[in-house]
Image 1 (cartoon, rainbow, N blue to C red):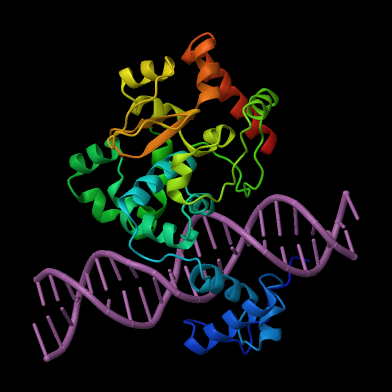
Image 2 (image 1 turned 90 degrees about the vertical axis):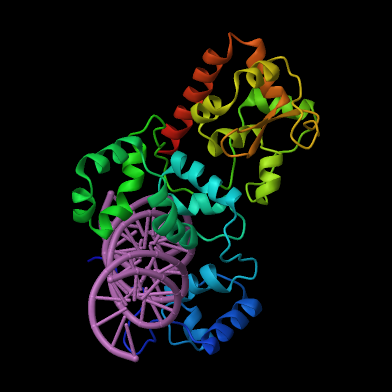
Length: 289
DNA sequence: AAAGTGCTCAACCGCCGGAAT
DNA sequence: GATTCCGGCGGTTGAGCACTT
């Protein structure tokens, strides 16, 4: 019983890819497209495992890939998304156009995971003054971040690692959108355009609401509740139908959809509305589970 | 200059879930 | 329903490089 290995590993090349192998793989995929990874090596004439080909293509050879030079904005987004999603690298990568899950995972493990520390962890380190640090293995350093982050005031929402190709839009939202002639947007937006125009239904998937609200200055909240567009640092008002909030910590901006704000404002107050929206999200996640 | 140590990141591994049979 | 196939995911490894002693 059990599964047979993805390929017989006898006689296959392993380790770093040569330029020649890269060219064969890239040429083959250009001609025949992605998929059928299992048979691809044989058909392309590569002495590689299908999985290895897939990985090489996705992480290195894809034409739209961005490598290195992760910008501060991207870094900030990674931190925030990690806070929300935990080690769901593929989900995080899906929000960073051109970035691969492997790159983000590596970046986190080598840089951000060490920088983003919890206060309890910092206290422990101060108390133990290096003793604990010495004992910590590399492996535990790598894996502890999400767990400990999950114990912070911003609990990680444990979703399933499902590809988000469809967005559930509640009926009332759908009606409003139809009424306003708004189109749902793809999840695969460029970073800036994603921040420019967040789909209301996408919104809960993208951000930690509690975190977001905590970061928003009180006057911004009241301004938003009055549906007054905020003037950002460039002196540009939010677009019609959405209001921009600038996060004081990150400098990143977020938009609230006008209809959504209208709904919040007209309800029983932000708190109860937020609670019900979060309940809806929880139900959605339960369904997914 | 040599040895030791730390860091980065491409690649591998094992497992999982959905689809097909 | 059980089994197999396949694509995809997150965790881990190790070669190569940079830096320090």
